[in-house]
Image 1 (cartoon, one colour):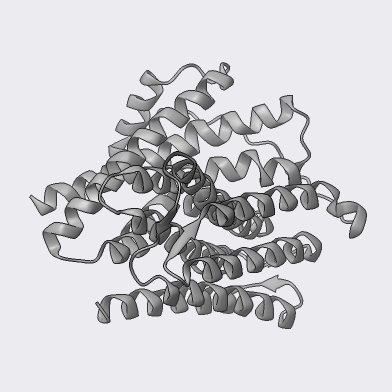
Image 2 (cartoon, one colour):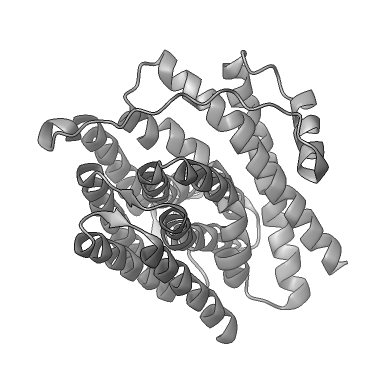
Length: 342
């Protein structure tokens, strides 16, 4: 039976990746144009929601599920943040060397460092309170305001790329079968507002299934839920980010891949944890126990942010193969270490 559970996990991950890639991100792009959002504001709000929707819903259902499973939500977001920072940035650097615009990167690294610092501080006592969730969401609002006005503080220009055409659902093979099924179920792409809301419903449903499967696998294999969340769920929910970043990196848009990884992580921590916990605490009151030992992984995440910032400074905001190799190697070491100390 355990093989069936892992196959079900794999199917959910593939479906999430295809839905985000084919429908969710495309509809968000069009909606942001309708709202006349700048590229920065769209990235910090709508695009962050798009790439982080799986982590947000996994955290929400983990907190709502009876039986103290919130460690799955926190663990998947912490693990996803480590994966995004080390693997996605590493892959982008490995695929093609890029020169980054330092102004937005400095902004995002500053807010990301603050977010991780708050996370470490808040979970250090083993619980999260209502005031702490409000602080998370408040900091994200400050971040969005900073994004909107950052060009006035440190002027810089957008790099212009050709707009990508809508993706078609005519692929062959196993992935093509998923694509054709999804294209049959989803509304036409020109009805992108409906596509957006339909995507949210499907992603929410798949995220609920992922939480249920994570609990079943954890119990069946006698593995702590935190480990399943930090590794399997974290990688699975980050697959859409990985694929999209790999594509744009090959196009020479490594800067976009790095910005997406860091910006998504800010949303994951501040909104992906803050919003689900706020909802539950407004209903039940008191505080929510974080469960599991996540302090170590959170500290590793904090150290990874500092390492990336130092590497960018040393390389004068350039990323290349050596940077990519080092970041990916650090992630592999982290995963092996987590498995060994089970």
